[in-house]
Length: 69
Image (cartoon, rainbow, N blue to C red; front, top):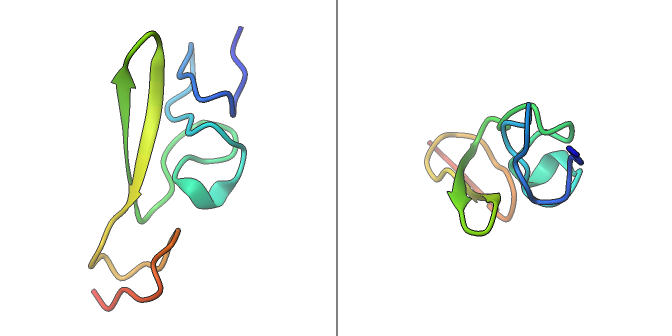
């Protein structure tokens, strides 16, 4: 069963970072990655998504306080 926000990438999900907040990397409906983030799915006992802010892309996201590109 697919549950967006549970941290597992299943079926039609592209990105699931374990929450339903748009400001953490994955879109809140798990349909993709938000601009300014780099997200990767990793295989452990199931697929999980880890997201990091992209530095020097001109977008202030996550915990960045400035990003002058």
